[in-house]
Amino acid sequence: MTTGPLSMRLCHLYPDHLNIYADRGNIAVCQRRLEWRGLSLEVVEVGLGDPIPADCHLYYLGGGQDRDQALVAEDLERKADPLRQAAEDGAVVLGVCGGYQLLGRGYAGSDGRRLPGIGLLDVETTAGAGRLVGDVVLDATLSGQTRTVVGYENHAGRTHLGPGCTPLGRLRRGHGNNGEDGCEGAVAGHSVGTYMHGPLLPKNPWLADTLLGWALAHAGHTERLAPLDDQLEKSAHAAAAARAGKKR
Ligand code: GLN
Image 1 (spheres, protein in one colour):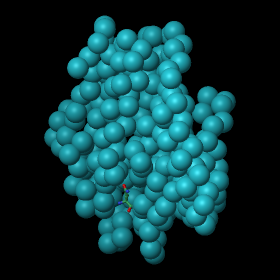
Image 2 (cartoon, helix red, strand yellow):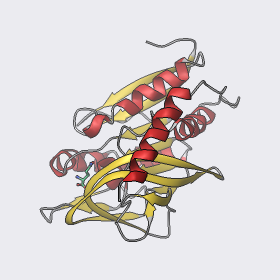
Image 3 (cartoon, protein in one colour):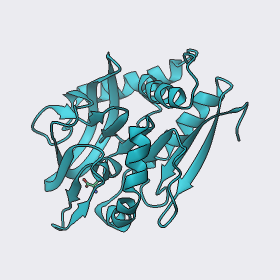
Image 4 (cartoon, helix red, strand yellow):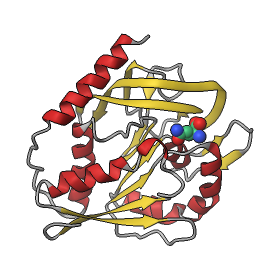
């Protein structure tokens, strides 16, 4: 259901394959945080074999098991040029976990098979021994602002960043990209990758509004987003951070 004039379009890539840990909830948050402001969102779902629309303002890929990623990787490679072009034109791209890995140069999974990524993010991922699982709290920096962001991770992949991107943030809790360098996620321009499920956006209203603000600006809406009453979101954020703080 949309309200008001169309404000922006969101392309949800592989909703049937990359949707582990309720990552679809990130789409609902984008929809509601715009509707609560009298703005509207059109969601375009793109699956295997579907053309990728060039006129969306935010492109989203959720997470998935190795087998789900294997099902979409070659198809995503065929969509790489229009997706990279959209990002170069200013569209926001958000990839979560498996989606993050496929936005990179490639992912060598637990079976040793290397899946091609689209190289939008200068990262390379290889599955390691054991999985990196648990709560995550990090100091994330976007648009010159630093805020804590909370989430949950469960991945075999160990991701290492090249010079073409910077980490989303530094960890306070959790394993992050590779369990070694104390960082989580990757950012290049308005393309963001992260390992954080939960889903990510409901408990991180600052992050949600930062990404939506970028996407709306790309759609030609330059007015600042009106503040919302985020008491519930902030309580959920605080509860997740407290829970993470209690665990080693
Ligand atoms: N299959 C990938 C890994 O294990 C991504 C997992 C995920 O999306 N949660 O690293």
